[in-house]
Amino acid sequence: MGPFKPLPYEFVDDASTAAGPSRVSDNANNVAAGVDVSTVEPDVRYLAAPELQGRLRGTEGNARARAYIVASLKAAGLAPFFGDGFEQPTYPDGRDSEPYAVNVGAIYRASEPDARWIVLVAHYDHRGVLRGKVQAGADDNASSVALVLALGHSLGRLRPHLRRHIVLFFPDAEEPPDVRTERMGSSWFWRHPPLPADRLDLALVFDLMGGRASPEIRAAGLADALFVLGAEADPGLVSLVRDLAPAARVEPVRLSLPMIEVMPYRPGSRFARSDYHGLREQGRRPFLFLTTGRTETYHTAADTPDTVDYDRLRALSRWVARLAVHAADADVELGWQDLRADARTDARSLLRLYGALDTSARVPWLLRRALAADRRRVEKLLESWDQGVSPTLKSYRALQLASIRAQAALWHPSGWWFALW
Image (cartoon, rainbow, N blue to C red; front, side, top):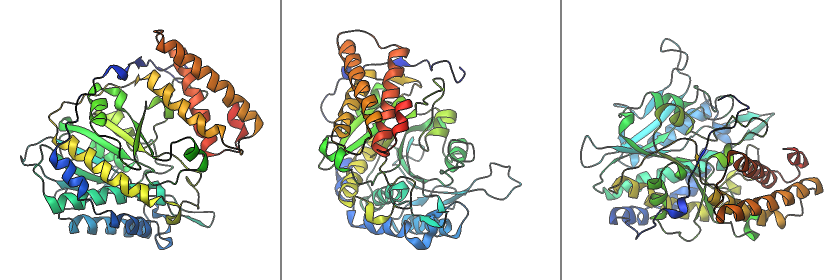
């Protein structure tokens, strides 16, 4: 395709997907109710403690975080996923080399040994110490690890009989310079899964699940937003998410993956944002990427345990547990088709973000002017699409660029140069 030829997106309209009655099983509701949310904050505080020095791949702090996760999985009564062990060394330089990273995984087995499987993914490494400052990584990504561990303990206590195996997977080597390369621990895992890749029905990938909403986001009514990306790839994924009602402190907001992956000057390129990279490139199996979004602490020394919104993270732990067990228990076939986008849903979600920018006094005039022009453009696009005009690659590209400017302004309000994108 090349970096300068637009990606050939197929446009879908998921508003036409029938919602239907909720089919969430008793197992899903019981496991969600059984999540002990009191463990979430202590887990985050340990993993993001200064003593672990940011959990950089290959360091003592990384090894201590890994040992903590393995001990928690054992205490939950879950089985090791990699043969007799919970650890999976990776060898991107060849089996004769030293291990590059070490993944962690456990499995809660379904009633039938040869059942299909789903996997929950939350990377446990972070960036270490930069310029003398510990990058603690509380939101990125200790929050997601704590959430997945809480689900594992609920499964271990209640022991529900499920249709599919549930795998809890914690990859290593996700941060720069490894991200979006074959050196990621998740990339190794997707190429060497202990269970057949063609029997994987769904991956739920979690990143940045604990950030505290800014005053601007709260003013826009998005304080409880959980962004769900990837459902546009199949109507079954849309229905799976719709089966779950919103809960207190959890409002699912759907976006297409292209809305966060756009590259400003390379229309034929996309920038995968988390551990689904290798799965999309190698396994081509259904997945959803879930995140509460970037905050201003992202990839800074300010991403500490004291900046996490624990009330929301506890609510998310139960909602995610319900989604995961529902996916493991539902009588449903999920498909996956790359390069799809739901332009109308994306435009509606983006217009909500502009409400946050309207209330911000920190956005400089040049960027504010560009954002105001973007908003008018998005409103016109949505109006035309609602009237039956089909999205085109050109019109959707305009929506994507507006999206990346808005996201950048919310993440870093003083960045006037984003107006040039």
